[in-house]
Image (tube, rainbow, N blue to C red; front, top):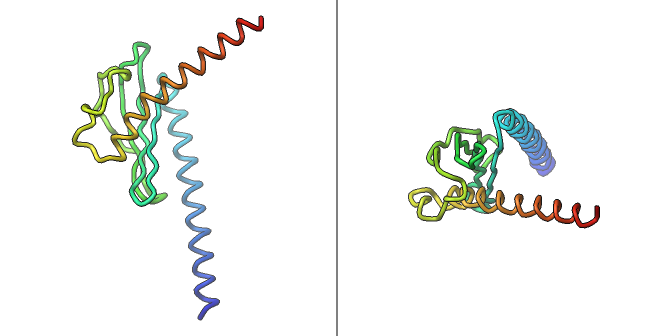
Length: 135
């Protein structure tokens, strides 16, 4: 009986690992395809006892959101879906008031897209400044 339970746990762990790797690979392929259309801002909110969320915004050169997508859920079976709530909004204009009506994890992921984009731009600026100082 105990050996059967251990075997079941091992099989379930292996299955979960396979599904998680499959989801990760699918997500990476999807991001690569999305990036062919332009810049992509990504934000995530981890869920410990709640469903996590990943929000992806395709943005144009003026930082206007052209297309939104979301992946949220508890399991490795979560799939990417359209999320066009913020289309035509400038990424830098996103704020907490715009996220009212969304669940907490999705709102955190939306706000994380703005923060992560700003952090990325600051990192690029610092690298450029460091490169010009050392040159």
